[in-house]
Amino acid sequence: MNISPMFFLKVFIFCLFEIFSFNSQAYQTVQLSTSNHRETTADPTAVKLNDILKSIHAHRKEIEEKLQLLSEAKTEQEKEKIQSGIDTIQQSIEAQENSFEMILTAGIELSDDETSASNEFDWQKDLIEILQPFLRELHKLTENKRKLDHLNYRITFHQLQIQKINEALKHITIINTDHLSKAALQNFEHIRQKWHDQLKESTHLFEVAQLQRNEMIEFKTSQENSLMDFFEEFSAGRGATLFLALMAFGGVYFIMMLFMRFCSWILNRRWKTRSYYQRVVTVVYHLLMGIVAIAAFFYVLEVRDDAVLTGITVLLLITVVWVLKNSISTFIDELRLLLNTGSAREGECIIYNGIPMQIESLHYYTKLSNPFLPDLKLRLTLSELTKYVSRPVLPDEPWFPCRKGDYVMMYGDIYGKVKHITLENIVLSLPDGTMPITYNIEDFFYANPRNFSYGFNVTTEFSMDTQQLEISRTEIPSIMSEAIREGLEKEIYGHSLKDVSVHLVKIESSFLEYQIIANFDGVAAGELYAIQRDIQRYAIDISERKKWLGS
Image (cartoon, rainbow, N blue to C red):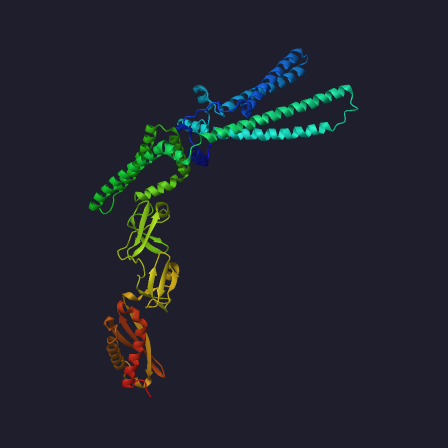
């Protein structure tokens, strides 16, 4: 037998709706008062009850007549036709008797004996026996609604029947009977009387069904409690049971969780990393927590003797297991991660969105961080972490090209201060924080950024006249480098200067080209453009003083 998992879920939702929206009859005693307060002579109910009895007596007389005709019938066809009519009339009598009793009892019926009630339960033989009380009570809770639906159907049916009979009688009345023979006229009168009797019967059945429905609605309305009464009854009954069961579940789970946290705190003081066996014990303990908490929930339901909530809980558990049965392979992969034997392991590194992230600890929500960027943190579920493969962390692991506040150069000419770093974007701005530009991480890495905050050098070219060719190789570089050094040291970034060197790199027919290189530590990274200007300025100053630029 193939039962869809959604079937259990639909039954569970329907059960919750019926049980918690229906004003349960389990906590009230229903007694139908007698009709002493009504005037019998003017009571339409009494009139209709009398009509029902008259109809029953008339039908019984009709059966006696047909039984007489049955005994006189000669052919089998006549006997079958008469017997069919007797069966139809007998069914009508039974329906009238049931209607009489339903009007008196407002639709309330006693259950059959225990044996028959047990035999009636045949809902999916493979469903476990514990759901029987739950389904039986659900059947009882929806009984009145089903009866009302049936009565509404009967009322609509008889309304249509009356409409068709009236149309037929209207057609019969316009037929001219003046030229009909005696036999045809007798048959005409017989058919006309038959349709009149049918109209009377349908009208009677329509009024009976309508009265039944009105009596049931009136009885139900008179027995309805206020909303506050309903909550009081629910709180004292099934609501209290559900609350106690949930408290037992949560209390047991919370206490066991505290005990596990206490043990983990003690173990973490001795061992910074958990061994394989410690992880196995943790997983088994978590499973035991769930089992014991569920057992506590069922224990409360058993003590309170609430079969309905027991059935709902069992049905919910079956639904959850059935829906999740196709996820066993995923659960196994996640279990391997928890045991630190999967594709991603604790303490190792994975690449998330191009950024190296270290796995701090493996739990249902695994924490990832970048040691170079303490503010860059991430939580991944085990199901998401199964998609990654980790690797060991190297001693000099390059976790990220820069930090917040560093100065970097991209594409060789874009220079800026790192203002923000996230897992998706990085924001660069001018040194004063203005004119921010946002790059996604992929474009940032593609630009091959160079970090100037860990030291940098400024290289610039300077040209002079070829008249100084004789001293161009040694004297000019030495004098110029010393003069530039003295000038840069006077600036606000002078303490960051490490070295200055000047090199002759090209001799042309009309000029000499020198390359000036100044090395700085990262503190002066924010003054890059000022340094470039100052180097040129001091080079020009010394050249003018020494008259190296020519006339």
